[in-house]
Image 1: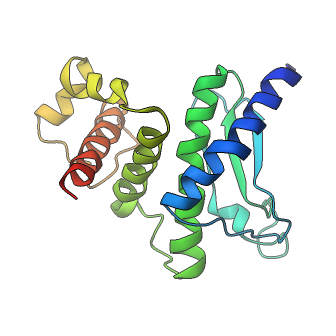
Image 2 (image 1 turned 30 degrees about the vertical axis):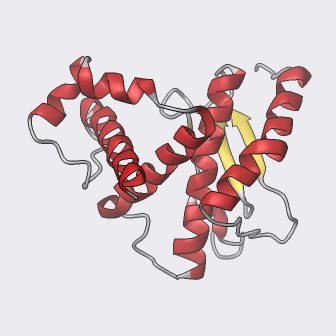
Length: 187
C-alpha cells in the first residue's frame, strides 16, 4: 500500500552498483548468478517487522523443483528503513547471498544453513557491514550497556544461534561481530 520514492531507489541502486557489489565480491566471494541474467535483485517490501532483510536458499531452486521459489539472486529488504539503514542491510544480506553461493551451490554443503553454522555466516555479514560503514556501535552497545548483554554475561554462546529468545539474538549478533573483528585484528 505504500511506495518507495524514485530518489531513494536511484540512491540504493547507485550505492549497490558502485560500492556494495565490489566490496562484497572482492572481499568475500562472487555472486552465483542462479538464473543466468547477471543481475542481483533487491526486493523492497514490508517484511512484517521480523527482519531488516533476508536471503532464502529456496530461491536457488527452479519453480519445477520448488514452486514457491523466485529463482533468482534475490535480497529481501524491509522498505520502511531510511536509505543508510537500507544500504547497511543490503551489504549484510548480500554477503549472505555470496556465502550461500559458495557453501550451498558450489561446495554442495546441505548443512551450511543450519543454526550450528549460522555464527560463521552472521559474523562474516557483520564484518561486511564493518568494512562498509566502520564500527558497528550498536553491537558494541549490546555487549556493554544494554539489557541485551544479560545472555552474554550468563554464558550465552553465539556458536549456536537462538532465534526463539530476542535477547539472545542480539547477544548472538554482537558476539559474532566482536569475535570476527578480533580475528581480523589478529590476522
